[in-house]
Image 1: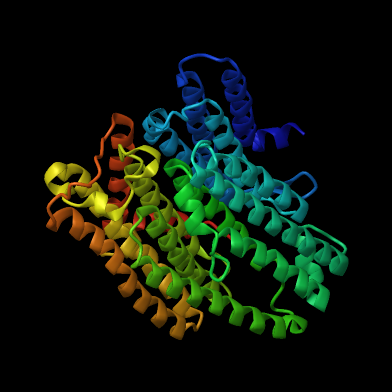
Image 2: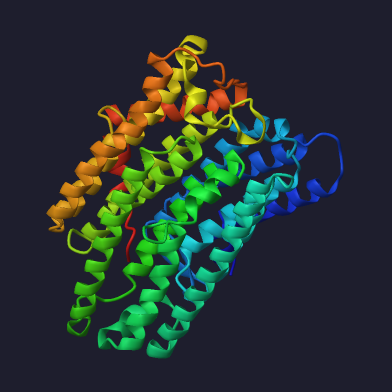
Length: 482
């Protein structure tokens, strides 16, 4: 038991921080700093503990339901690092919008806990519990601007649709249990050799619930409205922390079936065809609709759908090009950092209730703030996949993984969508650098905390775009699929 507690140290640290931050938030004081500082110390401390541990092999605790490995510790550390960036970089936004209440911080910590446990789960019931622990704070945070009808609408839509997909996950789990007599991933993998319609249907329902969570087309319809209505920091958290954890869990659920068994051959062929459709649909819908958007938050919503399509390329490649699926990890790492930087900058708009987050608000920004324009340009270039940014190499590796898996046609479509989608990012850069400021252009204010986060993210984007081996050698050795 003591050995298990030692292995679970980072998660115990996070839980202790949640309780401390919750207790601090109960104390009604004028200053919200104590809760913010407590949350920041919690995530930084947990990240240090988790990234400092490098187990030689994966360990399973709680009757094989929870995995402690280099992957799960990396995910916990990475999610805590992202949370720290949002806590440090968006505090000014919460104060300006007068939603800087202490509850925000412990809800964020609970969300991180649920996300990290979901990735570490090796049991479908634990996966569902962790999914709900992650989702419930997200529903609340989406409606945090209580006097804004758009925020209320976003929270309601997210709650109803998310709850429905949770029910789909439970239904799929019941079918899987009925077909295999077990809920553990390893047990399902062993039992899947015999195949069966009930197992295939249950597995498909599990995947549908998580395809909704990552907003893969045609299950993407909720994302633009929720992104637009939620407060900007919450939108950033959804785009990074929730997307990363959900996608990693999706990959592990996809590979909980033994596709090498002869009885699963037809299902594998059908599943790959379905995933190809989802990939192509996400790429086409995201890239084409993105170029028509005037709202930056909706633009980033459709951009996220496009990035889901790129990530699905890595998933398609994982069937035939090795079980590590390292291209997915590489892409998620780059995507989360550049998206965090972009949303921290988006939160700098001085207009109330996110009314200053339209494309036109960027017009003429170069003359008003060359420094801010430079940061925006770095993140937008990386999202477009321009050379010398981490976005370029991230796309390269998922393209190569898919090519190695024989998905040449899908890769060609993805390359064409990259060209189409680049227009949206380049248009934003052109508005900043080549146009005079309009009378309605928004005002932007760079604060010390946001400056530290944005500059750090920009350095990361450029450094790994020029010297990608620093990330590749580390992530390639971490198996995503067991």
